[in-house]
Amino acid sequence: QVRLVESGGGLVQVGESLRLSCEASGRTFSNYALAWFRRAPGKEREFVAGISWTGVTHYADSAQDRFTISRDNAKNMLYLQMNNVKREDTDEYLCAVDPKSHSGVLVHEAGYDYWGQGIRVTVSS
Image (cartoon, rainbow, N blue to C red; front, side, top):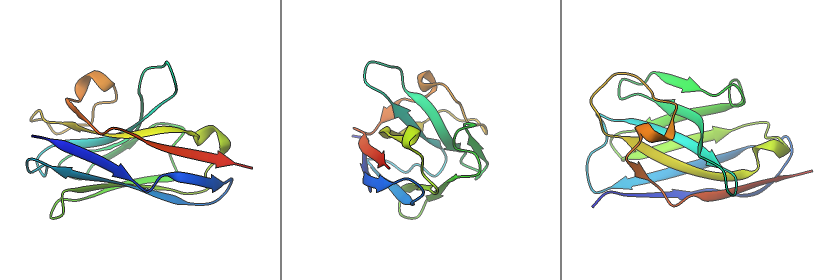
């Protein structure tokens, strides 16, 4: 059974940094694209950043130049380094797995089959 568990969320101040982690279990994900999404109450999940199995990354405009996505295939881990956070980064963040065999990163939630339960990030001033 595939399981994704996020950690590292919490309360931070504007301008600070935070690193989210996602531990995957149940299968090896080294050949799959992985991504981070965010979700506001009552809204669809919104793409934040993704990384293909070859290591190619893609970011939403809001995350570009501030966030860095990375993966450690040996540990089945996915990370999101969030620097210079802003109040508008406040949201629930979820990791996701796209188990289809392709070399790209999909930006819509429909492309992902496995999801973590989400973790809250709150940025205050």
